[in-house]
Image (cartoon, rainbow over all chains, first blue to last red; front, side, top):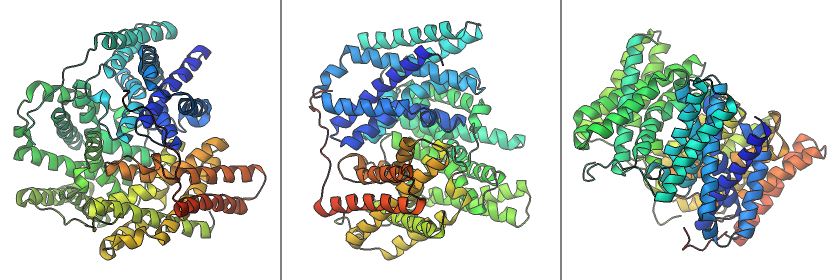
Length: 208
Length: 208
Length: 208
């Protein structure tokens, strides 16, 4: 992975860790809880991706920078954040969208490097992007928001598809990444801006 | 795996995917949520089995038919199902019992092919049969039904034990499978027919 | 692993299994549920540790004594325990603290034997000690207690750090284990005795 992507990946890790730490803060968890929530949100998706692919030991065992970023982020959130509203504002949502787009591409890339089909690569990209947040929500005893209505996973799916199609069209690595991330970002930002969501699949609730 | 078992396995995958998609519909999840619930219910147990055994990449990475079956099932449920009562009827329960019996045998078989002891093979069979539904329930913020009182896991356990005993008695593969599946099915169908359940283990609720 | 540590490990497994079985009893689960809760509490942390490290098949696949201990413990709890208060008393809490301390050291040891850095070894030790209880709580639809305020993970973290520092100081295996376990036990017992807990990280709850 070239250096720019690597630092962007650490930046995305920090952004996801902040979102986990804030969820812990809302539930008045202790410093251990804050750190665990930060960690599962930031590296949970990639960890499950790696165990499914058999890419073990998983990525953060061999490169401990991810853990350092999470620890520092968790401490910083606890020390500095008293008014989380600032962090749920537009800038943070943009940073989160960037993290989602990048994690998707990195996850898809890793799957392809293990010889998976493009469809599985898209799945692994989406898993890298959204499963950490799902585990965070389950630990907070909430039904994962991403399953309900936000256009969040959709952005990740589109990013993953654009990436694999670009590679299939012989576009080289870096432009393929940029195309995929741009696609995911546009959809996610549009969803935030116009508060878009997918229609729910509803069943008659009387039925069991 | 011979061809009949393979197609039966895909059929069981579809049945379990329907049960996940319906759970998502009851909670008004969006199409992504429906697909995720369908997938975790159908392949969650086998995925955890494979990562525990070290059979990675897990089965659906190399054979993407499982994913196609899940995607098509999820779309079909969203397009066609408005009255889920029809799907919680007797025919669906029978199909689900068939899926449970088959997944148990396939899971036990896979464990044995990795050289485990018969007891571990039974566990891996039960895991293949019931863990997907447990993850589905956790994502729906429910205590897994299978842990509470239905005779569901019991059918799977009996199937797994019959299978490993049959093999120990030198019965060959196909009849051993049939004996095991018949045993699991009889117990599960009897439980549905007479609404049987295991007695609960109750503690004085005042105690902590 | 020398023999004393091995039997202590099985003892810790039984203690953790009891805590899982009691949680199941409080929710009136059936015998299958009791056994599953006993198992995830006792071996859940070590299982996730092993899949993350790539130490597959995981430890209880090759050594089935762990499963036997869990099965016997689950049956014994269901047969004998009617008044769980006796089991939430001081002796049980001490046994649980011992299990926590030992699991931490064993987890850290295993990670180091896979060549991880000391920091990752501490993480893997803590994971071995606390993740089983977290899965138990999630299956019981509770926010994991360990994330909220008890000084429980803290004891494990201190134990892990003492262990890796002792090894770095060239202290040999057995005394390093004893130092680490003593440290973890002192903190945990002090926390129980004086009902200590860490301060929560609170956010203004109006904010989203």
